[in-house]
Length: 219
Image (cartoon, rainbow, N blue to C red):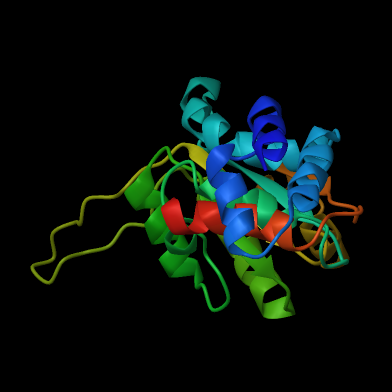
């Protein structure tokens, strides 16, 4: 275990000792931890860019743009999309409270973007056509840089929340292909989408998930 812990710390796996402790609690062996270290050392730029989005979103304000979307997609399960998005979300809080999931509506998501302002928004598990349609609508709203105008009961205007940030999504299908299939090849939302295909590669089992579980529990 000492060798495994030292290797984890040296490789920067999670928080090192905490990741090893989580693996041990889940019944993993030192060999499992060393396997995690080996996977961690592999170059996965398509996943690293998702994690880096946590630090990139607050810098959007310096670009002069109101918003952009980093869309990760891949049809195979176990490719690492959800894991990478979970790690990124853990930078700013408890992932399960931060990430949007099934049933997220356009109004809810845009409202959250306005509330957070310059912090990243994460939306995972986009699978259905209806969800893709909602995502497309959100892309248009994101580029406006502020929420739509509303009036109070006394007919005065409600203050409009503004933002300059990134929306980071994980889906089974390409949002670009979805929009092109509808003939939306010149939409303003589309040109501000950076898509990243996430291919499936060999990962380890229990130890890999235990390290991520530690992030979820501690935020």
